[in-house]
Image 1 (tube, rainbow, N blue to C red):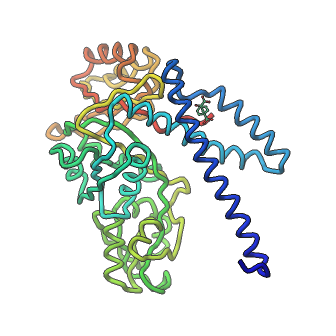
Image 2: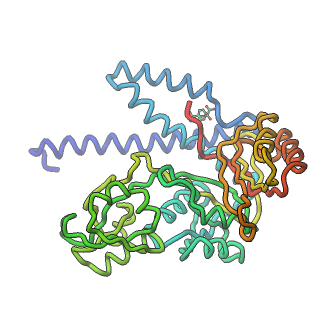
Image 3: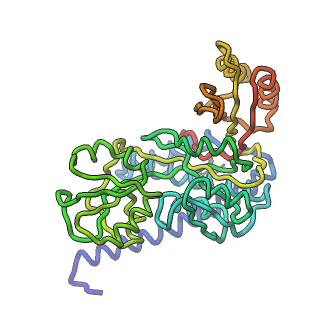
Length: 382
Ligand SMILES: O=C(O)C(=O)C[C@]1(C(=O)O)C=C[C@@H](O)C=C1
């Protein structure tokens, strides 16, 4: 070590602290796993808001004495506790459903796509080994699982900036697969290029239609740019890498771009700062969700066309005290002007209230289908 270089000495000290933090976080995670086993035995819910509140209040106090502001402490520990809850949930769920050690996951686009990042994140929490199947389109992803070439399908379903992904909602009407999980991924779009260039030199930008929508405000300030649609952001990155031109750019994630030796010319260009995509995970068989963790059920229903039909159906959920977290509608193929409604409700499908609500709905809807019941990853922060 060069002891004359003060920057190097300080950096080495920081690295030593960071290593300690990493091993402490790993130790904390092991304890959380032990807590999950203990809670399983006494049938205690995984999430304990009271304990989280006490823990955060005490940590904020401790932080204050050490000159760490409350916002910083809260942000850090929310992430740590969220990881703890998700680790515990995955542990109980995998035990209940005999989930395999290794899984074949089908996702959209070549390596580096946001779907690829989502597949890796889901696998890291649930399996030891991941076998990746990159697919060309959403239908191809479902077919892989329907025909047993893959165990799980990862599909983006909605984005905080551009809304619902209609093609995926339409696929859900016809697939035999069940939703078994969900996860959210922050989307951080960049202008990616392969060589030394400037924004003013760009002529054509390649990407999937979704990122174009999500970055429309930034893109509108370059009226001369041409836009070319690709199957995925990763397909766009691959293209830019092959073209190796100062006049072409891709719209996608910095992490994905690195896999294609691209660098970010401009970062954080999405219309909304909080640009998050929610993905759903599907498999051939539905799963059972333990009552110790928060569950979500997704269902579709077609109501009659008489006035008030939808309101009547929604009232059933209110009467049963069931929270609806999402309501979407899509046209029914072959029945012009008729709509299929998609609902996410915050309840386990095996809950008595849900069973009773479904029974009541049978009498007032034309059709209904449960798409799946799964652990909810959208944890309500304390
Ligand atoms: O103390 C517990 O009950 C835990 O499960 C641990 C823990 C944590 O990580 O601190 C995680 C989840 C609970 O909501 C509260 C706290």
